[in-house]
Amino acid sequence: MHSPDEPQHGDTAFADLARRFAERLATVRPCVDARYVRPDWVRRNAELERDLLPVPPPDFLRHPSIAFQMFVNERLLPHELPYVRSRLADERPLAEPPVGDPPTVPLPGSDLRTSSNTVHQLFHLLRYQEATGRRVDDAATIVEWGGGFGALIRVITALHRGEPTCVVFDTPTFSAVQWLYLSAVLGEERVVLHDTAPVRPVPGRVNLVPIGLVGATDVDADLFISNWALNESLPRAREDVVDRRWFGAGSLLLAMHAGDPFAQVVLATGATAVPLGDFMPGQHYLVA
Image 1 (cartoon, helix red, strand yellow):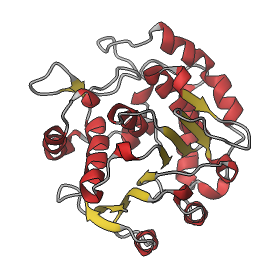
Image 2 (cartoon, rainbow, N blue to C red):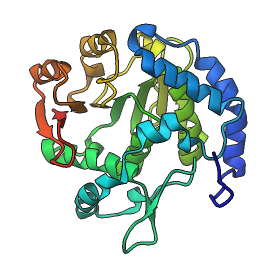
Image 3 (tube, helix red, strand yellow):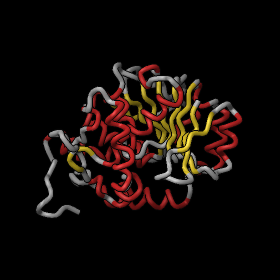
Image 4 (tube, rainbow, N blue to C red):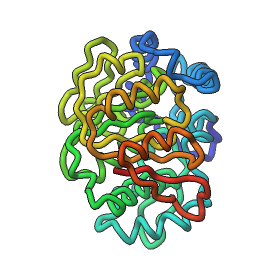
């Protein structure tokens, strides 16, 4: 996947993590619940495993199951970047780490490089703050349903002034990818990959929980986030999230297709629908 002209990011820390990736994946692979995962995502997970094993390459974020599914198009930058920059007192959260060799663009008027994906994640969080009057800092414990490769949680840790307890539920494959990415970016000591029940999140750390352990996870969240992942989860997963009352969270940030029937369930819990904007028609936030 790497061309000779692309930068290599295989430093010692990443190389060590990459060598241990197969072992970490093996420990969580049994922690799955087939009732939660659509067939298309089962296929994508299998494809991703085939390409990342036995040792993920330094440019693993360019794998199609990540690059095409979890990096938004740069056409969104002109719409989202001005909003984000106008609301950030410190632009350092816009800086894109080189881990995984993500596609980046220069940040105008700055020596930083960012990505459309990081801008998009910050846009979500800042829109949530504007719509609710709450700050991400108000949440000491944050649960994310469907964390991708770890982009949003990385941005949350950059934006948050404290050390929040984060819990990310995802398929075992993506939990292992999140361990690789977030350990390389944040430091392995800040990341916990859970593989046995019961799950008791470690305070002040990023806790990665494969979906097979959802029912065994003891967490009382302040903020629940799921950006399009509940759109792409099977009905049983949605039911379990609602039955758990958003894992105790009193505040919500969901991005969802406006026509999804599940949106009505969320609105019935007291959430408010907020359109993303004309540049993303048919998409809205559900916030509380």
